[in-house]
Image (cartoon, rainbow, N blue to C red; front, side):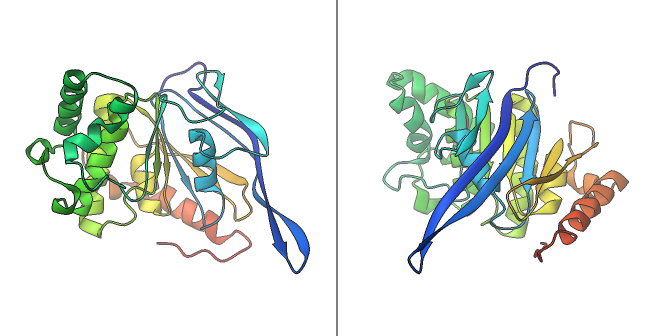
Length: 267
C-alpha cells in the first residue's frame, strides 16, 4: 500500500430504492452515507450480512449502478459509468460457452479494438499467470468450477484495469478449491500489485486476503473498518490462519457482526 491520493475514493454514498406495496410507495435505503478510501495496491474486503449494501457499493464503483447521492472517484476522476480502468470478477464466471478459454480471455481486448496478434499474446500471458496455459483451447463445459473462475480472473486482468473488483468470486466453489483460489489470488496480488476491492461473506477469507476489512451494518452503513496487520507477502495461508493476529481479527469482526441489532449467519 502506498501513501498519497487514494486510488478509489468513495464519499457519502446513498442509494435509495422505491418499492410499491398496497398502493403506497416506500423508500428503502440500500446505502446511507458510505465513505472509505482504497490506496494504490491495497486489498480491501467488504463484509456484512446479506442485503447490507456490499455488492451495491461494488456495482456503483464499477459504474453498473447509479447512486442516489454521493460520489466515487478513481485516481481523482469521478465515476459516471463503466470504464476500462475497472475490471470485474463475478461470483459465477459467466463465460461465453461457444468460446474457448483463451477466446473468453480475449473478449475485452476485442471490444477495445486490439489487433488479433496482440490480444492473443496478452491472453496467453494471462493464462500463464493463472496457471491455465495447458487449457487454452478448452471450452467452458470442459473446465472445472475453479478453472472457470481462473479464466474469469484472467479476463478481468487482460485489459490491465487500475482497480480489480471482485463480488464473492469463490462463493460457489467447494472448500478445497476455494482455499486454492485464495492462495492463487494472494499470489496474483503479489505479482501484479493491483488495487482490489473484494466482497465476501466469509470472515476467514476477508482476514486472510485483505489489508483492511470494511464491516457493514445491516442498514447499509459502515459499522467499522478493521486493519489487518499481517505482513505481505502472504505465502502460506495455512500458517497465517494459525497466527494470533488472524484469530484475533477474525473473532473481532465476528463479534462486531453478532452485536449488530439483527441476527447474522456467520460462516
